[in-house]
Amino acid sequence: MDIKDRTAIVGIGQTRFGKGLPESELSLACQAISAALDDAGIAPREVDGLVMFSMENGREVEIARNLGLGAITYFGEVGYGGGAGCATVGHAAMAVATGQCRVAVAWRARKRSAKTSRPWANVGSRVSGSAQWTRPFGLLRPVDEIAMLTRRYMYEYGATRDHLANVALACRKHANRNPNATFYDRPLTREQYMSARWISEPLCLYDNCLETDGALAVVVTSAERARDAKQPPVYIHAFAQSIPPQCQPMTNYFCDDPLRGPAWDCARLLWSKSDFRPEDVRVAQIYDAFTPLILLSLEGYGFCKRGEAGPFTEGGALEWPDGRLPINTSGGGLSEAYVHGFNLILEGVRQMRGTSTCPVADSPCCLVTSGEGVPTSALLLRRAV
Amino acid sequence: MSEQWLLPDIEDADSAPFWEAAARGELVAQVCASCGRRRMPPRPMCPQCRSLEHRWETLSGRGTIWSFVTAHPPLLPAYEAVAPYNVIVVATREDPAVRFVGNLVESPEAPFYRTNLALLQIGAPVRVVFQEVCGVYLPRWMLETSERS
Image (tube, rainbow over all chains, first blue to last red; front, side):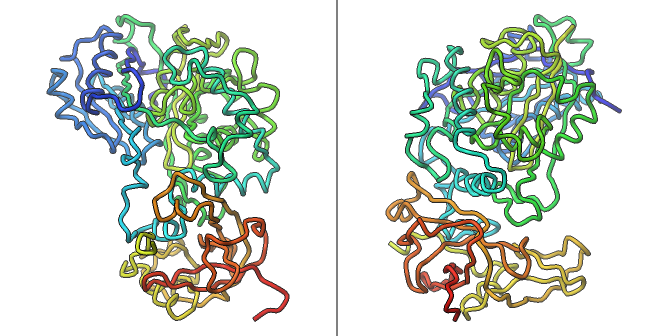
């Protein structure tokens, strides 16, 4: 059975973004889901499916009680942090398509702006598991883990800091058009990028995503039911997940080919399930916790050949409106908000509805990806015709 | 300050023999007793033949720098106090896919955070040294020089 175009996203909702928001994560989740249901014109009692990140603090029973949901007949969760976003929507689509539920909600709520809430700060003095091979040597943060791959990538393929800057500047330009973006009124220049302080060389401050409090949600239902919804349906055209062989999340240095990340296998399945090819895609929302993840993903998802992502970013290729592939058209994790990549999904929906603040009119579909470097997932969303 | 370093759990069932060997000054890797495939990090099962039997092979302790970073704040307090410092990944001479995360040091006793960062270079040949931190012996790496020990 194929789920191609059998389900659609009919509602999206989000809270404001900020640092140190007073509400709890549960409250933020409820607000985002409530807004998404209103957007869809669907009553809470019609919701019978819930899918969330495994790292979510507000559990299914609390979500259902607070929102006054009906009987839930499908619930599930997806792990590995930033790799989970598209998968929560994909699982919702599979559950609806196979009749396990009729209206499913997927969401992400997160409060991470306090320094003490960062997971790398909450480790004991003795570390076990895969961390024992990295943390004692001072490889502490996700940025250090990705910087190690980036240095090797630059060495092998001649990619430069200018290529990374192309990513950061494209996202910032798009955020500067989005009033909801954290950096809406803060332009970024190449000079500022090049003179920024290091975080983990070769990555500087502007290679890192924001840390944002907020929540977002989407409502998924069948293509038939979607025809009666308030909003034009955005079809879930294709969905894929991947844990590649010998994957070690974030510190994938121990396999035969560390620069071939989870995106590659995810992309292979995604395109095999799709009517579209990479050359048909004119807009994409690509997971950007760090700028080099965009380069690795452009290769993994087939927009260019291996090692060619650096030059691919040149000449404004990633920028709206004239670039070959405008990415992260709301500003992405780098400049809109970092809510574990879930904001990329909502921007994909807005692109297909035609309501983005950087609207790309001629793309029949929008690629949305989740975290590269961890077990990952991706969606291909299709415009209603 | 040293009590604030993060240290490996040396009683971890899969990796304890590695840390025991490190205390003896030996760099070892797990090898499948059935098919001979090396694996890193240590684990219960061979991904090639699913054997649960393994042995530990002593490596030459030589390799090349596969990649490196220089970490700057914000960091955990002990590490922030000595930043910027280097972290490297070393590909071993025996098997370039058997890699270790470590640090480049300038002598067997020199602190990893005092290394001249200009010495870091992908492809540079290195050899292992072991440095004791609170009873744990951590593998770190020195550049190979012409006067080989």
